Image (tube, rainbow, N blue to C red; front, top):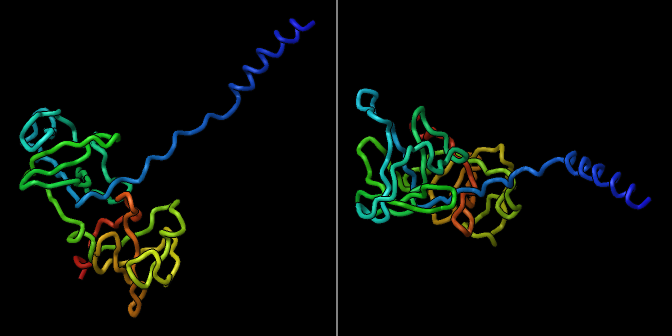
Length: 209
């Protein structure tokens, strides 16, 4: 009798396990901000040969690691909307005309030589005049505009991810943002580990005036 029960339960248990919903992959962590933004622009069509690939080195010009298609790099697609055919990357370091970037999702880094058709901007240059939103799913402590650039400062207003705020200036991990024409406060734009807390609208408000 026990043998019959075991033979009956084993297939039933297997079917039950197969019917259970599979857990989805954990969400990707928010990307690192680094020191600035690199926009890789494509080659003109008449200059393309075997594709528009970049060469990565262990140190500037030394120790070639690989050639890579820019589309395969960890792009800031969740953070900044890129133009047609463009690729936006966070820059982790700079030495003259060489920029250090992460070349895979594990955070391994390499150096590439800046090209004339590309654009590099330090965040202090890029962010003022643009509009930002909080990323969804953040801790409550990050979701507020404060009177001073400090987590201990008084809260001026709570925020939701659907509200855009115009950036006036950047100071360390904080942005001075406009709540209305008469009121400004401070919003944290990256966390203690250097990861993004906001997304950025692609166009610059200053260009529209």
